Structures are given as C-alpha cells and as structure tokens.
Amino acid sequence: MQLAIHGGMPYRTRPFPTCANASGRWLGEEEKRLLAEVIDSGALGRNDGSKVVALERAWAEMLGFGASAQPNGGAPLAAQAVTSGTAALHTAVASLNLEPGDEVVTTTITDMGTVIAILACNLVPTFADVDPRTGNITAETIAAQISPKTRAIIVVHLFGQMADMPPILALARQHGLYVIEDCAQAHLAAYNGRLAGTLGDLGCFSFQQSKQMTTGDGGLVVTCNEALATRARLFTDKGWPRGIPGLRGHLLFGMNYRMTELQGAVGLAQAGKLTEIVAQRRRTAGLLRQLMADIPGLIPPHIIPGADHSWWMFPFTIDQARLGVSPQAFGQAIKAEGLPFGVGYIPNPVFEYDVIRDRKTFGASGIPWTLPQARPGIIYDRRDYPGTLRFLDEMFVMSWNEGLTEADVHDIAGALAKVARYYRND
Ligand SMILES: Cc1ncc(COP(=O)(O)O)c(C=O)c1O
Image 1 (cartoon, protein in one colour):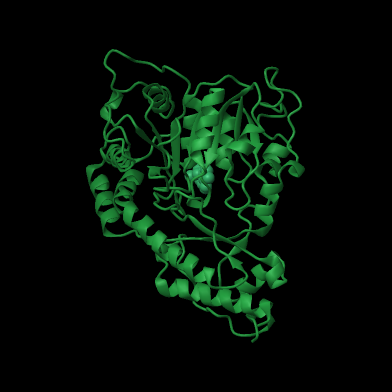
Image 2: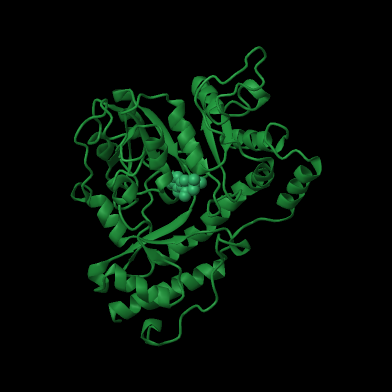
C-alpha cells in the first residue's frame, strides 16, 4: 500500500464540508426571511427593533432560565446579546467590577479573546495547566494558581466538552471566587444534564463564523445574578440605563457592544436550529468515535463521565509506540490523504503570544502587570505546563460542522485506517 504522501492516490479528493462557507452551515430561508423583515422595517439597531431581544429570549429559554425577570428595556434579564465572544467575555469580567491588579485564573489553551477580556479590565491573567486528554483546566491545576489577589476563574469548555465543573465550583466557593464559563465553543454542551453557561456566575458564547450557531460575528452573556445582569446590560450600552423611568445619563463605564438587528435576525433563525445542529454534530462525531475505536493505534477523543460534548472540534491522538511515528509525520500523511486535521489547536500556550510575553498592552506601561496593586514577579514559564505542551504537541483536531454526512465520516475513518495500517505495517 502506498500513501498519498509517497505519490499514491489520496483516499479522498473531494473537499469536506466546512464551516467557512455554505457547505458546512445550515443557513437558509428562515435567516433570509427574518433578515428581510429587519430591512423592510428600516430598524437596524437593537434599540429600535425586536430581533435581538427575541434572540436573547430564545437563548434564555433554551438554557432553561425562561424569561425569568424583566429588567430595564423589557428584555429577559438572563441573556444579553453582544457583538462577539470577546465582547461577551469583556462584559462578563467587567460586570464583576474588580480592582485593577486583581488576578483571574484561566487556561493556557484558548482563543486570545478569553485573555483580552481580562487585560481590558486591567486585571492580571494567571494560567492553569490543562488535562492533556481534554485540554480543559481542572480544580487541581486552578488551585495551584490561586493567590491572595485571585478574584475569578474563567473556565473554557474546549472544543465543546465541558470541564469537570463540580470540583471547580467547590474550589471557587471555598476561596470566594467568581466563575465565568467561556462557552464560545460549547453551545448546548452539558455536564450531568446541566447546560454549559448555567453553572458559573456568568456564561459567555461566541457566534463567530465557525461556531455551532453563527451570526458572522456575535456573542451572548448569560447570568442568573440580577446585579451582574444589570451591570452587564449597562456595560454593553455605554452605561446608559435605557428604559428605566426617571434614570438618565451614564451610570458606569461601558462600551457599545450592541448587536445589530441584522445579526439578531440571523441569530434568531440559527437559535431555532441549534438543537438539531448540535444533534447532527453529535451523530456524526459519535459515528467517527465508534469507527476510530476499531482502528488499532488511534485513540478516540476522551470524554469525561457525565459530559455531553457539542463538537466544535473533533480531537484525537495516536498511540506513538504502536504506530512508531511522530504526530507530525502522521499529520502530514493524513493531510495528504485529504483529511483536514491539524496537529495542535494553537501553536503555543497563550501566554507566549507577543501581547503577553512582551506586555504589549497600554503603551510601554506594562499595565496590568506593573500596576502598584499587582502582585510583583508574575512570570509564565512553559516548563510549568506539561499538560499543555503535551496537548499542543500531540492532539489532532478537525473543525466539525453540521454539513458533514455519514459518508464523509466513513471517508475520514477510511483514510485514518489506511495511514494507521501503513505505519503499523500489517
Ligand atoms: C474559547 C473562546 N473564547 C473566546 C473566543 C472569542 O470569540 P470571538 O472570536 O467571537 O470574539 C473564542 C472564539 O474563537 C473562543 O473559541
């Protein structure tokens, strides 16, 4: 048998559906209909229309909050739509109203938006190592980062699998810390039946192009805490208490993170499909896990007991001893067979990006690390992160999507089996 990497025929020559375009997305007539309603109405801003508010209600209901309370503006208290996942995280962190120089523990493996939210509030990020099987932080690795300045934890549910939350929540309670769930990649993921975003003090979602549901860019913050919800709402609208009779002016520092009605229309249509989108992702990812379990030398994604994955990415590893090949060489071979898997999700732990390593934040100030209130001497050293390095070196990832069919999954498994067989030499 000759691998494509040696000049043979690739196992799959047609491209797979992708989230980057219509092939991997369920975007269609409902999105167009709601979008046309917005354009015909002439009301494109959230404060003049109804779609963003309806999207917030839909999400609040989907997460089981119901339209619990009616705050200023009449929208459900529990969900606040914003312009991106980064904006959602910034809003969530800002709503905690922490003091500059305070610390927030988060993960080494995430999108930079998670860390930008911390830095934007003049807070110092500290990083917990990850479980190399899942890429998620744990109560144990978080505990190792807690200092007298720590005030909050941002838990990222990586790739759509929730972190092991009960011990993390217990640790947070013990130390009096807020918990923000970064569910940007984990729409409708669950743990012991509880949905991502509903366990911490606040949950944040991203609707960027590649996420389970999309508005192109967009995001959402959820919380059951009335005080946090009020601050979050104000923060997204320049501190402006719209709709509260007798209250005028700007009550606190805030941004304009208002989602437009155009995004709201697409989001509302997408929210109506989200349960089925996630179910479809679970069907195809479940099939691949099953097929992969029968290919000696491949290690299917590790799912922690009680977790219901919602498959933003499909990760797996190889048994290097069994196959006698490095992840890099195996990765080149499966790519040549037409599979869109890469090794590692981001090239390095987030603290090695220029912005953090060189403290490129506010001019040459080095703020927040150099603030007089900040704990001195905080450094980030990759040698303290064995789980992270292992995960980044060994984990294969493929962006998952609802356009993938059973036939696509059989092709993926077939190509993986071909390459694994070659290296196993049987
Ligand atoms: C875990 C995580 N956090 C935060 C973000 C930021 O979201 P956005 O790109 O919508 O700003 C993303 C998006 O890629 C993400 O995956």
